[in-house]
Image (cartoon, rainbow, N blue to C red; front, side, top):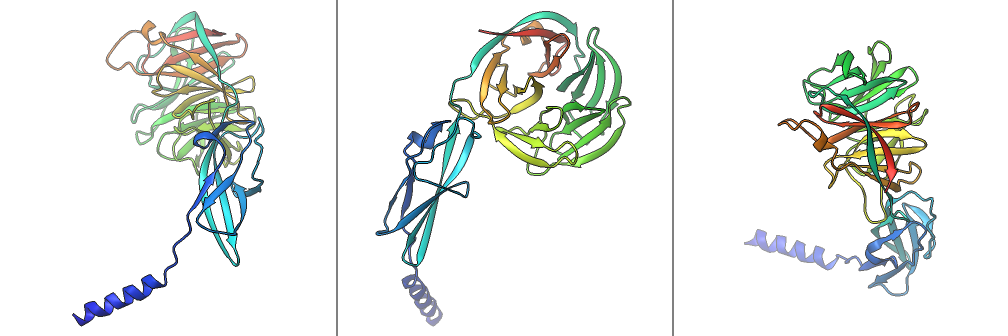
Length: 339
């Protein structure tokens, strides 16, 4: 009993010495803390404190209460912080603000120009042309590979199986090298383009998974299944920055196979509402176009292993796109046209 009373006394003493944090609520002046690029904040705070001074920060950078976003600012989530000072004490609170694309994406559809045979057992993850030679990365543990393909007849010219512990993902070709991702192993591989021999591997950093990959002739761009696309140094494979992919309404997640075409990133979306490719501005993450590929899957042989639309490669000389899917028996050459 004495022990209980002693502990209770200590608790009461500590409780009496506790100072509750003040209530601080940040108001952004924008509905649901969301607004389109080019919008202006109208920051204020509601607080239980009196006679305080306040400073505002955007991702830890000081800003004014009426901060103006530019049309070119990176899209996505920002942290807004308010720091309140009262005499010699300071208090802070944070909230998340989402910057959306300024305009709705343009809508596109497709027209099939040619149809070619495709390996029905290929769980297609990455697809890219080097001249007329098609490089393909396939997935699934024990079935993953890197291969070269004659797109005209579907013949597999070279095939480099991955160790069964790796689940192959996207690929891209840069100069004399092929870079291939793996899914959850947090490792990518670099191959000699001609022999398909592995030259080295590299670890992932902040991005935890590998999905799609493309390049602009210098930098690599990597998706990881989220709304982020990571910009990677092609010499040391360090993740230097990232963009968040946004429409004028929401973030686009599950970004999969990537293709760089005329300064834009074309991205497959995995298990989205429809079979679509989104066209992304790599500078700020804005979705500038959506290509609806509905109906293409129905043009393939229907079987139990048939899976989702995935794989997009641009043929520079023909100026057409080649698309397929996981375990599809057809490769389609298409033109993308505005609706």
